[in-house]
Amino acid sequence: MKLTVFPSDKGDCLLLTSKDGRHVLVDGGMPGSYRRYAAPRLAALAKAGQPLDAVYVSHTDDDHITGILALTEDAFQWSIFDAHLGDAPDDGVSDAPDRFKRPRGSARPPAIERFWYNAFAAVLPDDNGAIEAALVQAATALAAGGSAELRAAALANRDLAASIKSGVMLRQRLGNRPLGYRVNPELGGGLMQIDLDLAQAPDPLEIGSMRFFLIGPFKEDLETFAQKWREWVAANEELVREIEDEWEREPTPNEFERLRRLLTARATGLGQRRKVSPPNLASLMFLVEENGRTILLTGDGHGADILRGLEKHGRLNSDGGIHVDVLKVQHHGSEHNLDEAFCQRVTANHYVFCGNGAHRNPDLRVLEAIVDSRIGPSHHRSPHPKAKNRFRFWFNNSSTLDDEVNADNKGHMAKIEADVSSYISQSGGKMSASFITSPRKPRLEISVGG
Image (tube, rainbow, N blue to C red):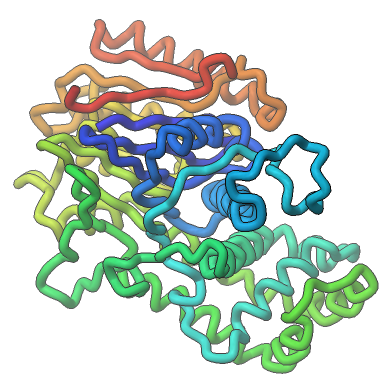
């Protein structure tokens, strides 16, 4: 297997390629970074006639999904061009309407065989669309509000509101007739989840020589997610009914003030979501295996859930640990998603960090915990026999990457580089690291198993 890691602003964007030449796109990062770094690589696949066998969207946070929205927008524009002009030459001066001309601002994406994605509508089944309508319009109004109260509500809820809106947009695009992508076809379009009440774990999904073992999310977490939002809608029925009236169109500027007044008093009711962090707990997570080699793809999941999923598949040893070839460190190396015990139980030859310093991610304490699990004091080290192997840190950004989106975070990346340099010098040759330092070489390529 080969894992290609792109700069993706503060998010994740990776391309997994099997030994037999099958491709899976893992998240899309932010739209600007997607178009600048990932889209040209995908266009090369399209030119070579190679499809994406799957697009795997871990969850609906903007730093994972909005690059996928850019991908589907490009695919839609090219589908219009193909439908109206087909193979006819486009000399740029033809009489065809602009919307039918060859797209100039986007590279042609490859064909896409399937999406693996837990659509918001599937997580929250709702016949009349009340939940989606309320949340999408709330997101729009919150973003446009001018009052101090609404700005406070927006600050408390902006990530969740944006996440919900992006998730609904992707669901709509995937069902768009010119595209018509299949979503979770292995489950008849249903949710990908683990039911702990069932004796057996879900069967692995196969793409070429790769097998994908689903390790999260759990049914109970999705049900908690759904219940929270049902309670919110039940407590705000009047608001929901008024917002539903606006669902067929985006609010015009003069409607923002009315929606702002409706939402100001009630928007703070969404604040309880911080206790469960619904989009992150809903992350799709996989252990990927090919010819005995393993890659752990974690989205923004929590370490405890990762271990529960691995245990469900019987992949932990007698000490409760596992050693993989590649660990995509969850949630950009946030301190909220792993602890020292996780680092001791899950070790890897390669640790991949996706983050540009935003929100101080990757967190310096996370780097220290991982390093301690490998070369630290004896009471911090992992008991796994392979924890004595050499290991490498991979970062999809740096303090020197000439990229305007991470300019404010260069100081944090510089601290990471200094700490990593110190760890390497102390490791006696056991540790190494790679950073993306220039747009002239805008990706990392990790080969696993030749």
